[in-house]
Length: 339
Image (cartoon, rainbow, N blue to C red):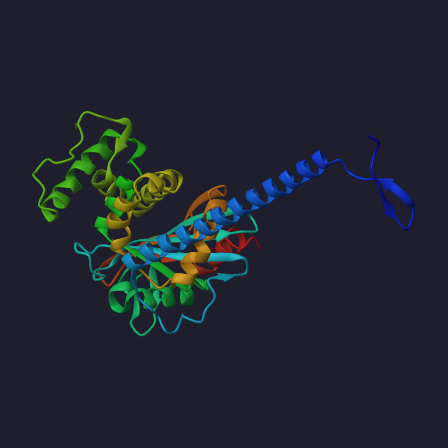
């Protein structure tokens, strides 16, 4: 039997495709449609999982709206500034003073995360309250007054914050699987000393989590031990204390993402339920979408006041740091904003 031809008015006659070739083409089109359908289903399932997870996380946190800042953008001049506040409340409240203040600045332009400790003993102007230590601003007017105080004294606008109490910090370290840090023997002694108060507050047996008093070098610390390590201000004054806080936070940033995936419910209950923030759900969603990209960013640590820009003095019977604000404003503009 000869070949079959069909009429083509443009070119005359052409060969008719073999039935087997037609069948193979149909199978290929069917396979591509099936693959596309699977991809669409997976994408939709991923979006649904992400939205459901975000809803669960956000419901655990306490949202504290600050009317004066609600309309302010999260990102300005290419930088996201979020103030991390560790308050010294022994309960799950928002009372107490700001025991730790770390400015988290995320720059998409430089692909860098800056962690800048703000020393609590800086002598600053607090709007409506005269001059006092920086950490007094939080006790006078909460996060809103603290953010206003930082803008007044350092010309840096920060519109978002996250408040973490003692228990949340310890839980966060545990969720990350603990941290490995280099400790001197003197630091080991202070860890045990600070654990005395923590164990009493948490009604844990005396001696719980104490380190071997003869140890030094690289040690693995759990949540309560890392908290005790961060609270020590007797070695290296408050500069040493803030450096220890940044070391622990850096370790958590590197370790936490993988641990969250495997222990999500535990992480949800133990950490997020102890957070207070003025970030909206949409802002949290936007940040979560950038989280994977941020894991590739460099982490740069620093503190304010910078070396050579302050002196220790006594004012009104308080030991405070008298700061050259112009030097520190310049440091912020050059390092965080790249000017």
